[in-house]
Image (cartoon, rainbow, N blue to C red; front, side, top):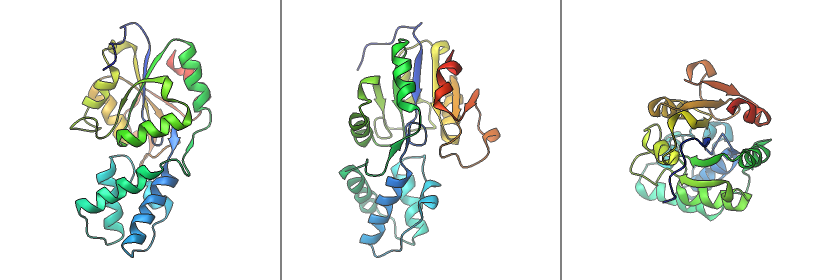
Length: 218
């Protein structure tokens, strides 16, 4: 465990999928690799995109239901194995993310990841993008016994920072509910994987361009 963050330092916690990276192409690719192994027809990327946000078990459950594939733990584990083999074939950062992370680091902000993606591929992606050094804490969907929208993963990622200095950045209904449950300021990135209108998601600020994130954080 890292040392606790000093209370007055700005703490920015980021979701990953749909917030920092567009991972839907790889999540759909792996889903279709899985379905091919069971002689099922592929699903469109757009359809799989709508299944993202609540962790691997939920994603695979929805894929299996859409493809009329009986769901077993072996099916879920096979998806995990296929995805871990290479989670960065088609995944790309959203425009401006790298520059925003660099600018925050230069300002002395501390940063963390709080995602429902399993921790191992999350760390692999951060390493391969050259971002691992930005984040002192990574909380994945399997790091704790619960995942978002339970607030405990976000609290773990906050890592002792004073609540008034914490900002949570995410893209979805799950993230909005998590921020509200934890009582922290939530910034909604509108270009990710939300399933409904922006107005239906509890948020303090919305943005579509990472170039303005620094100004929004104050």
